[in-house]
Length: 230
Image (tube, rainbow, N blue to C red; front, side, top):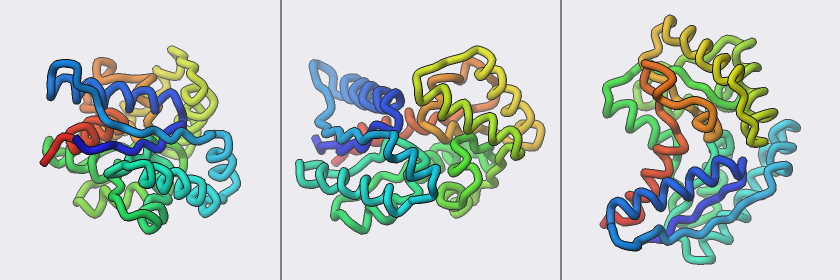
């Protein structure tokens, strides 16, 4: 079994999901008392969020590079960054280490294409929805990416940072997300990427008919299967 290196804490609520799902997949796949061989480096999210808000991406990259190097030094075979937004600096991190990073957008695109979905809505932080570092990965795979209008992007982003990252779940926020998804479906979206690892804490597939692609779940499942692949 390979050792998974997890860069977590962004936020810690969604990192819990990663750890749980990875171990559930390993237990189901191998049976018995098997669990995942993993190493977690959890950062202080306040430091990362401050970098995001102040457009100090290089500074945030240095924090995550330090985390990745520590994981590599501790024996990790590959790295999983347990957040969507900070994949903005994934290339910088990759250039600083010798073990591979499993990119969350590549994993998500694979699942979309496997289900023959080529037009997809992207929900996430304002950085993920508005900047190209994430969307470009999807477009490269031939996917048409739809994002909400500006007011809806603000609603989504504020709920993530003010509520979900703090462990706050509100029924009215859930309804707001579902209303936005309905608008995107009318614009032609055939699936929805839950492109922030906290969104799955608020909404799930049973809430909506359009297919959801929960990036935290897909990323964690991919990591688990990679750890036991030949």
